Image (spheres, rainbow, N blue to C red):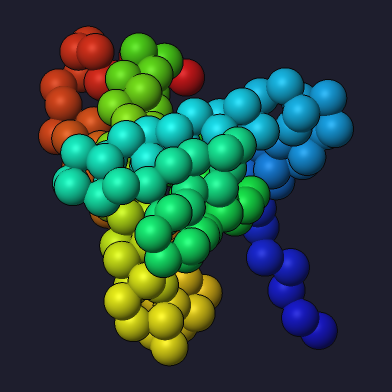
Length: 178
């Protein structure tokens, strides 16, 4: 007879990570929230992407979530999977699941979301340049490399934050009760 695997204190972070990640993903799928939060966030990301490309010497224009080079007529559109939200959900869920105080979690989530947003901007600029200059490489860069790098950024941020938390001393910002 097989023994049941006890789900105790050691499994709590795993369960919390899976539950909070799933809940965050579902919440962002609620039509009203998606329409009033996710889409404006994605449009803001497209605006920043356009401004970044303009700053780098590109003459591009933005319309909603689409950035276009009017000279070559090359365009890319940010869709839900391209806005950095999935990597952000992974980061938030991992930080919520870690044993740390609320202030440390808020600090980690706040700083981490900014880094993920900026990393996604770099990814979008690179994809635009790849798509315009090396169109045969756009799909692999977009479908395989880009998402993997964004998840790697989220995991690296979480591991760095968790190491900082675990090195903290009892009674510090890092070790309040959950």
